[in-house]
Image (tube, rainbow over all chains, first blue to last red):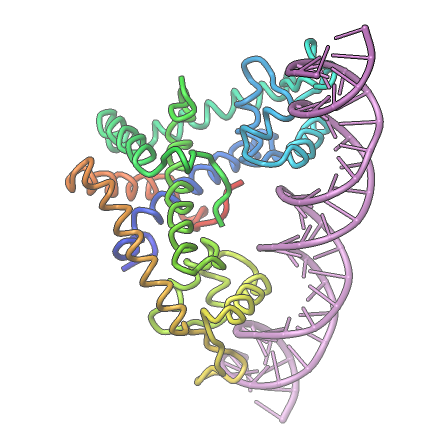
Length: 158
Length: 158
DNA sequence: CTAAATAGTCAATTAGATTGACAATAATTA
DNA sequence: TAATTATTGTCAATCTAATTGACTATTTAG
């Protein structure tokens, strides 16, 4: 028995956790090489939320499943590092609209490229068909486990 | 497009993250109902390491990928909550041997049961065969992504 | 026998979240 | 319309779980 193949009922969970952290580690190593060494995984999920048409602080907090204060701190950090910008909200005098800067967009594009290369590296080994089965299985797994009282949300696990 | 099926190259990663956090959330909700409301996911990985024949603090730190000071704090917490105990190491006067208490063993047994029921709930939907394919795919995925310079380790992702 | 490495602890610091309180603005309703 | 209520975002204090650094006791290597 190796660390890579834990015994019994732990295995599926450990495999899922290892896969997820291996991919995100790989992603952020490659991002760092391209100059994006000041972003964490959670920032990627924030970028994803504001990419299409921006979002308010509260919307971001809701998306990430953290308090608005935590989101606010994150937003300030990312603004200082030139990934996003805050403007007065055009429709709501209380709110601010958070959008991506050019550097933020560049980070997203690089992330896309890296994800594609990671998936391709895997698809090249197991084949497209098997890759699609894996995704389909994971979708069903997620769907099976979650229910209305326990909504899906990507939160840190530790 | 829903939150459950994000677009493009993010999908595999998001599915892996969602699966992992959904399972661990489910596990710890069920553990809490059975009275184990003072353990975190990382404690499960600690238990796993010391189950067979105990381990020293340094071995635990190595297993979890944290500093020995962090491991030491965790050990103290779990000792105070009666999951583990520290005895002088029989072979090394510097070290201490950390082992499970009866409560620790009980927590492990309950965890096993819950994992089995979660996996069965899924296997009942997709079938044994598909379940084994999923695991095999994940093993290969993990193996593909990791290499010698980037060893596998389950770390918090956020 | 001495020097270097290792196990564990104490203390201070850090990162990243939390809760609580608040002002400004918007929405509801009497 | 005026008064009440809810929402957005910020400031401040606190908490948790990790970190780095310094140290003692013990073991291993030369």
